[in-house]
Image 1 (cartoon, rainbow, N blue to C red):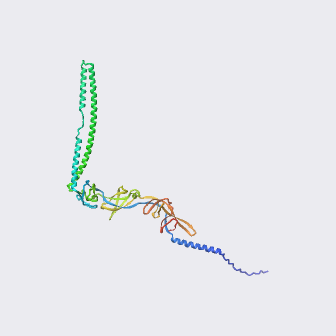
Image 2: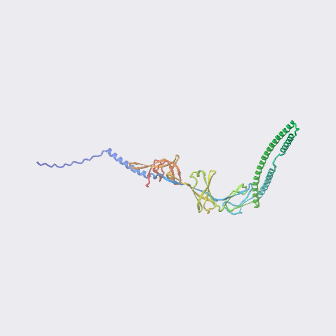
Image 3: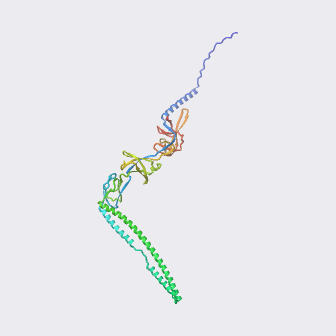
Length: 421
């Protein structure tokens, strides 16, 4: 029996239509995804781009620039006598002078009056001293001599009584009492003499001390006398006693100058640079400067710190210069202070400050469905030291990713782009 092959029957394909809610949800999700991509692209264009870095060890060197004045190392002060009027000033600061040049002039009449007064004072003091030193030592010896003679006579009478066998007992006792009385009188005379001598020595000591004080006064007046006589010999002209450069003039015509009238720097004695800084600012630096670079016009060189002192809230530095090509006048100096090593240093551009103190921005990365997102977080730090380029801080990890700089202002919570390294 043969089997018959049946014909193949094709059934029509079934087409299922999606339901409306599912289609809306899919389209909405796609739209939101597209919107998110577009929004992120827009934000990416507007967000700051930052360069990141990590803290590391480094040296911080402090420098500062200040102005000063160069003067000769050895300076002579020209002093004037008291209460004598300056009639003429012939020099000014920065002027070169030679030995014998006239610096200024004084009133000759006042100088003569001062000299006459000094002569009288010296004569009076010398007379007082002579009176003190001419007083004889007081040594009252007459009572002591009389007591010694009286004792000698009493002893002689006592001896005669002893040698005379006819001397009565009463007479002998009287002679013995006379000797005892004479010895007591002699002791009193010795005590009186010692006291008088002590008083005389004390009086002489006072007189000698007074005489020494008078001699010192006389010597001081004699120095002034020589000064006045020398000025009168030049008709009141004050002359330079050494060649050099006038560094300062304090004398004023028509006024007296009781003290320094002119300061004169001696040429060939080397050069000093005097710098002045606010003490509060100077104390911010670590110790004394280790290097000092000086510039004056086309001349430049180095100097070494000789001394520093505080005066009226300022620190005055005296710097010895190592070259002879300088001239008196202003100059600029760069002071370099000893550097110090720190383990956590950052570029100073990474540092920010507000009313609460110093802080840096950390860059923290998180993964989202749209990719990696970087945000800024403020981290408070302690500033240890900084200069124009580098800051040493405390309170941060060596692995921290820090925003070193940005192309726009940065704020905590900002999303940022990280510049390619």
